[in-house]
Every structure is written in structure tokens, then in C-alpha cells.
Image 1 (cartoon, rainbow, N blue to C red):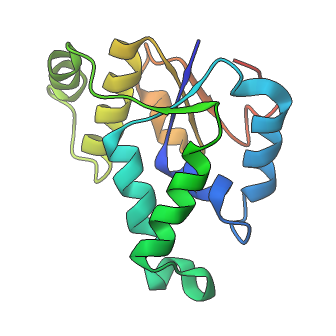
Image 2: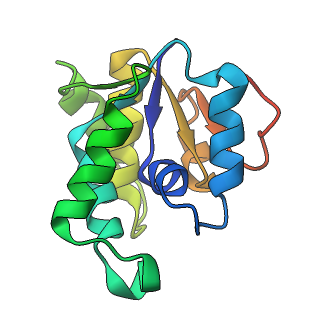
Length: 149
């Protein structure tokens, strides 16, 4: 099963100074991405946004051109591919958010969960909040660091 990449995993993978860089690399090098790693528009834009945000990246902040270079370098790895939205995503997104209490990360998390669910992908992340989506096949690092998809 191919794996949809959450923004926080992508940033950790691409930024050597990130606290989880070694863990993201180890998970990838353990063969977990061999069935394909998927980037969607929201994870792409999130990664580019974070790489160019000085308050987050500090001395490692990227210019927009450098952020694109980081993205292009990552995507040149044959394990990565970009995918458009699956057809049923909107219906699943609505179902995941219906009657859900307020949460600042609900919309983006629900979008990525719906993308993974409708595209028949698992999801790789460092965000434990994704566990709220019962039907989502998800690996949350570092807790699930030893698991293979």
C-alpha cells in the first residue's frame, strides 16, 4: 500500500536540523516507502510554507527558490509521486468533519485523512491527532517507529 505523507513528516525528512530528521530517514530507509510515497497539494504547500517560515526554521529558513529545490530534489527520488485528489474525497471529508467539535487542526487533518482513505493509502505522520480517525490506516512516529506498512 502506498503511503500519503503528512507535512510534518516531509519537513522532518528534508530538514537535517529537525528533531525528528533521523527518525524520518530511518523509517524511509527501512523500506517503508518502497510501495510508493504520495504527496498531495496540501502536503506540498504545507512543506513549502514551513520551509520558508523564519520563526520555525530559524537559521535553516529557505528562500522560495530553495524550498522548490528541496521539493524537486525529494520528488526526484523514484519512491515519491504527486497525486491529485481522489474522486470521493469531498464526501469523505464532509463525513469526517460532520458534528466534530472545534479543533484548530481539524480541517487539514480531516482532508489528509480523507485523501488517504479514498485513495487507498496509509498515512505517515508525527501527529498523534490523526488517531481520531478510526478508519484511517496510519503510522504515527515515534510511537509506531518499529512498524512497517
